[in-house]
Image 1 (cartoon, rainbow, N blue to C red):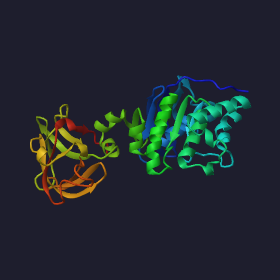
Image 2 (image 1 turned 135 degrees about the vertical axis):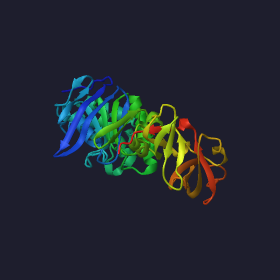
Image 3 (image 1 turned 180 degrees about the vertical axis):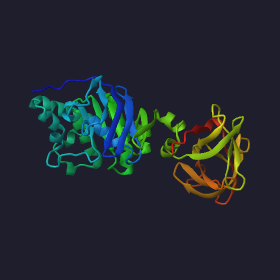
Image 4 (image 1 turned 120 degrees about the horizontal axis):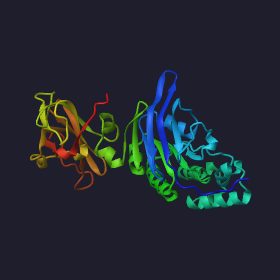
Length: 367
């Protein structure tokens, strides 16, 4: 017979994880530390290795090399049921023939917890996720958000040392997904549980995480806080995957100036402080950092362009600008002003577009 005990938040550490499936490398040299009580998102496209990494943490896949440590203890060789981890799957995996209360109690019952203590623990957990009134309902009688909270409650009730979330909001519609992002984050902070979230949704990673690890081709390309990753991407992939970015490819000549070829004439752009002093270089500028119209005239980097297309997206206007000197388009986001839906610059308008040096960043060419 077991009893429920409280656990302190534990550090999760991955050291050089490697995983192959035949000749295909799924995960390569993944090392990351998740501090106690924090949430780290593994973000990347399908096939980047994020789900395989999560499955290795959970014990469903065995790494070919590397170690997994929770609270300093090596759990790499332990079976899933001995790792003291909680996991919420994308499809929730609730038992359709069991009530809400029975679903939440399942793990405790299998562990041999006494009935009275089990009922008390389940009741306390359902209070926390605000589902006490639905204890006798079946999953088919619940909304998607309610099913998600049942799955979360089932994972949290045994007091796991680490919580693993595998695309937990992917099955929800947009509005519910956004509200559940806040709810999940609030509960994670309230419980103070160390959490790893796997997602391909950029907004989800940005709004829920203490840190984001951007993955591609089985590797972590960059890890850091949301604002750091977004404002200072280290590579072209990170800049273009996390949000939208205008990338300028050129060659550094001298005095912090890069030459960008293309179009009718090409152009000369000034680089931010600390940029390379020679050789090829990639410059990334976020669309919302670009200034359009008369305000761009005095900026250190300025280009002539015309409005090729535009779109109203609720809180901002998105412009596609054709730049003849480059022979290509760039994108500008501008906070929408005036009456709802008003777009300041009509299609076909000739405009200036520019940016301040501190609003650009040199990135690596990871192609």
